[in-house]
Length: 204
Ligand SMILES: Cc1cc2nc3c(=O)[nH]c(=O)nc-3n(C[C@H](O)[C@H](O)[C@H](O)COP(=O)(O)O)c2cc1C
Image (cartoon, rainbow, N blue to C red; front, side):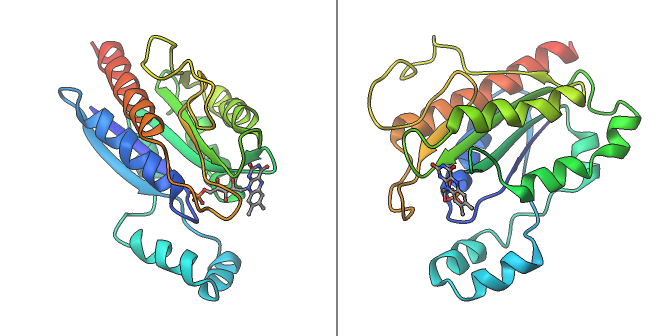
């Protein structure tokens, strides 16, 4: 069973969550995990050329294949990760989802479990709005949304870190200076594991 993790990340925080989600999914028996990145816009690529840190993160991701429609069609479950942009997913991720019309027409994504995860600069920068609005097109595609239940350790907390019932998350800081907390990564692992387990149950 193929578990696809597709993410977009400019400064590396969503990349770290994606890697943790992938680890969690890989811990499920029978799961073949595919980690894929969303293709960068040419205009943004040119801006990144002039930003040493973003260019370094881009370099780090070069070995991760770009997600194709074939990857999405072949997947038994998909986890989508995007940074928050004005309380919503990044346009790069929306562009990928908008390119799925041919899959929508044939019902190729229907019945497949889906999860979402995100990163914000600040505590109240819109993690929940991003995660909930990322779910909307996935429901149009007929996917079965899988969240993060409160039985997962670390979900009930009052610290400035991530972890929502809608999906894993983290706080990057205003200049991207923060790293995901250990608990954020653990919740991301649990989310990947849960989506893979549910995909296995649905296949059976
Ligand atoms: C155009 C733009 C809009 C953003 N909007 C928000 C926002 O609404 N709330 C927030 O907390 N952070 C916002 N951010 C910060 C990003 O969420 C942050 O850079 C991202 O979470 C880092 O993830 P990454 O390291 O995977 O790129 C915005 C950043 C950009 C460039």
